[in-house]
Length: 344
Image (tube, rainbow, N blue to C red; front, side):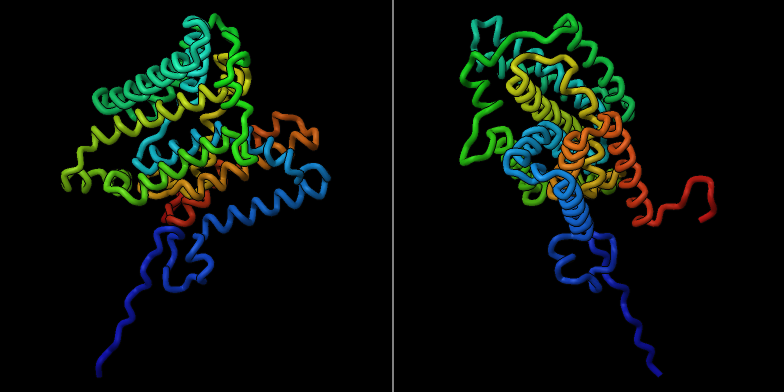
């Protein structure tokens, strides 16, 4: 008698579950993204019911502008997490770039290009420095960038004497970046869209992106396949520094001056939370910008809703921390990770 064995269902990279049993909608969108869309709909419905102005076009634009800087950092945090790393220093990098852009602008006779170029130079230099410390200093990325969080924050305070620097709202270029609109959308939002599309194309449609996933998934196999892991890690951290510089310039444009800490503190937690909620595996090798962008929208709508309702802003930090823990717990359950200290 011949026994017919049914092969196991193929695992789906988006949901982690059997690909053969997924409904078409989940297959097209992804289970993680569908959950985020549902959570976002609930948040919008709850706060829209509590406040008639919450769902207005004006408030939606306020939410979008406020979430732009977090979104930029979350998108590049997604890349570094996929690559198997982490960057806790992104908020401090934004502070340094913001101060440098305003101070260079002022010292060059109100030259906006000089201010932006200085911010990019500092951002790229910091990113490369982080990469070099991790690669050649053989320091764990979490420890290296945790040190950077303190060091770059101190640097921003030192060069600014702990105060806001410069005034850029008398310049058309900075005003356009911070308050201008194109086709009804704020320029800041268009910049976020452009960065998101560029990173998506990089990750999903280039050999560079495939190699980044390979490094995060199994760095030993990637090395044996001939991928120069050191080069990729340094380049990824340089990318973070570049986008942090963009965020710093936008922070300067939005607030009207260089901010050493105000507006940049806590951005690292928001970026990591958004990436984790968006489906990035903190061990690397899995994730995408679509889920991260949905998570940024969820966090932005939640934060704005709590503010509109007059709830103490400290509860926003509690909510962010809780969401990060929830995201990690969900990942562990999906991956069937053994609980620490408990039998398998």
